[in-house]
Image (cartoon, rainbow, N blue to C red; front, side, top):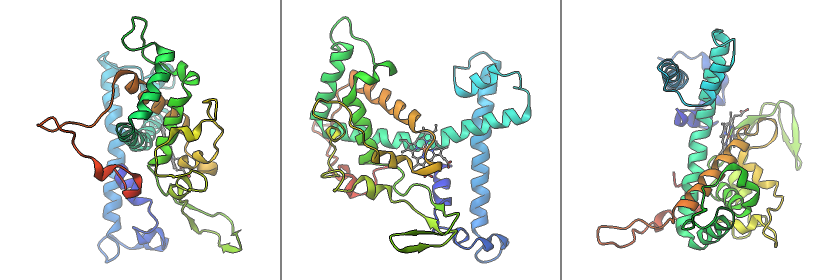
Length: 291
Ligand code: HEM
């Protein structure tokens, strides 16, 4: 489904996105093939909305459901038999899953790669974690919780650096201007498609020195506290339609990264002879997309 969304929102992959009148071409006419794609995407979208919800309903009925957005919303409200309310829950849950999974998982994959390639970052993170959670071989050791966030600025900096280093939506979602505008002397007519190059913003050497290096420290000041960096927000889009899931994404990346680093030392996988398996082909976002 997410692949279909990614293709469908591209202004250039489908001519109908550039010439909306093409929507009147029947699917059997030359140039109307996009309608087959749209029909398939609609089926996938409906499946994403219906299948998990059915699973949730069944698990509530047989008493095996766990706490979740859907389960809580259904149990809380007196209107849980109202079809509009049910449809809202289904669609919000599907939107959250669809928008959150590839993006958050993509950043997490990139972060694991970065940590494998940068043992020094792991070491600094572990020192910070040990100071807050206790060392993993001491009796008082515990796993991190969200309450530890403010005491773990280096882990927060890793979250920001991973999101910058391998931002998963390089050109965001295309938008259209509602009014004529002007930018540096260029006239932008009403209805123009605007694509933000978030990748270039987040890899601008003027802002982030040596941008293809993975350096969480760039988000910290001399005292090791987080600096106020407004540009990193571009990873989540800009303006009114910026990502509404940013806080959830950052909290979820924080707890995953902190928990992984508190529990494991990450390194290269070994081959059958015990030698490190080379991952040189996937070591820098400069070489292309990993995922
Ligand atoms: C690292 C993780 C994430 C990244 C990098 C990310 C990035 C983005 C970007 C660039 C956009 C387009 C903004 C624009 O149109 O200008 C977007 C939209 C959106 N995101 Fe995220 N996102 C992430 C996680 C999440 C999560 C966890 C959720 C929800 C649980 C979410 C929900 C949404 C929704 C619903 C939209 C569409 C908003 C709209 O069009 O009004 N995202 N995201």
